[in-house]
Amino acid sequence: MQTKYRVQNWAAYERSLRCRGDLTIWFDEGAIGAWNATSSGLPGGQRRYSDLAILTALTLRTVYHLALRQTGGFVASLIGLMGLELETPDHTTLSRRSGTLEVPKFVGRRDGPIHLVIDSTGLKIVGDGEWHAYKHRSSNKRTCSP
Image (cartoon, rainbow, N blue to C red; front, side, top):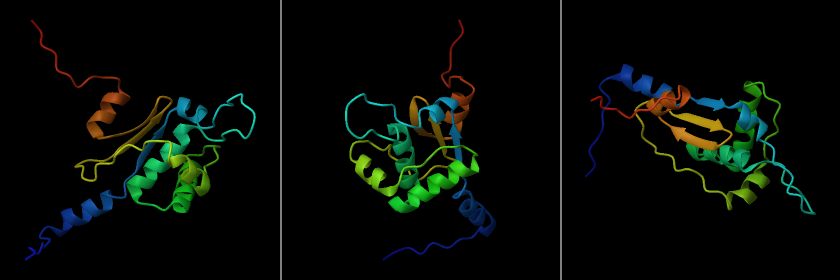
């Protein structure tokens, strides 16, 4: 027999539902420069998007449970909102390249906001404390003084 869950604090419940849609994405200047793939120097068709671009789109797909076509539109919308002049991968490219890249696992339950950090070294999903440490280049490790 299942236990029925009843909401008792509607204000807190509604606030938590609104926060589920909160999205913070940071594009480093190096990541913007690394969005397009570099030439391989080999004959034949060249890759248009770097692994970073494909991984960013696939991670957003995982976080928001989107179909591939919706993912392309969502990424294009985000890039447009940020005022960047970047092209976005189409659903065929995402599907083809998804087999060769490992998308980071998304932990579904976090107490605070989720930060998707995209810099020239790659992509990482971090919590609020980790993001502040990354942003301010500080360490969370405690040190003992003699």
